[in-house]
Image (cartoon, rainbow, N blue to C red):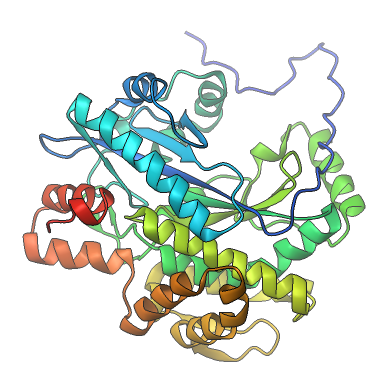
Amino acid sequence: MAEPRPPDITPAGDAPSAPPALEPFRASEPLTLGVELELQLVNTHDYDLAPYSDEMLRLMARLQWPGAVVPEMTSSMIEVSTGVCRSGTQVLEELTQLREALLRCADKLNIAVVGGGTHPFQLWHHQRIYDKPRFRELSALYGYLSKQFTVFGQHVHVGCPDPDAALLMLHRMSRYIPHFIALSASSPFVQGQDTQFDSARLNSVSAFPMSGRAPFTLSWQAFEAFFARSTRTGVVRSMKDFYWDIRPKPEYGTIEIRVFDTPLTVERAAALAAFVQALGAWFLQEQPFMPQEDDYMVYTYNRFQACRFGLEAVYVEPATGRHQPLRDHLLATLRGLAPHAEALGAGPALEMLARDVEQGANDARWLRQRQSRERLLAEVVRQGAQRFRGPQGRRS
């Protein structure tokens, strides 16, 4: 039997369709937040991934909760998202409501919901592609990479007043990609092995051809020209086809930061969103630096260091080339943001993150400590499920 032709390739003799246009940028209230969390569904027998997304979606449809709940690439994943939030506190309130609804449904199905950027011991070839046209297209195009994309991330949207401001915000945020990775890292185990990475999840993302970083441009007109050139090749149809670390989302009037591993708790997820918002406030109110193309000379190195070593990484300051512990730069950043955080009601969230940085504590460390003690990854996942339930559910 002939193999299926990959999607989006025009057969010989067919007239090519006109390239799609980039959606207009819809201005949004500056610094508003939206958070998406990709979550693991596991059985309560051996704590492996379980294909229960359809059942969860049916049960969730009967309940009241903010935001949205949708399927993801494989059927052992589910994605929840907040509505438009004005603070990290509101993000936490909405994620808490979503968590409680998820747990009610999971308990009825005798399964568990878990955070973390990877499932520690699932086998990629056991996963099922969720039956949705876009996911089927991606599976046909990317083959086994689609099932290996059973990884779990947090995405944070930040509202921007206009498209040029969005690009400026995007490239300023790019200097802090290592900070985001180290704070959220929660994927040390893959296929039953300790990868020696704090965030192994991002290695799966990097396998896709449209991953990496956005092109350096500070004008929306120039970005539209880049998008037009990309769509003329037939490789790109929409912004969804770019798996960049940060990408514009013109239909929402935001930039979307995509490098966070899903944390083990919604509390940490909300704190990370608060950190992003405080950074954005600093950028808008103080205009602390103007990004340059040369910033990206150290981008890949800094990103790798944070994925590999987490809070113990080396950070190269883009403007000066100075090498320093990422932990030191993170602490200085968090302390410098204190006035903006206080104004946003995010002071406690950033203080929590700073305490963790001082102690070298992230979720990857927590997972490794549990595995060192238990010597059984299934028990680590069980304890992760208890941790996700919140303070009342944390018995381990």
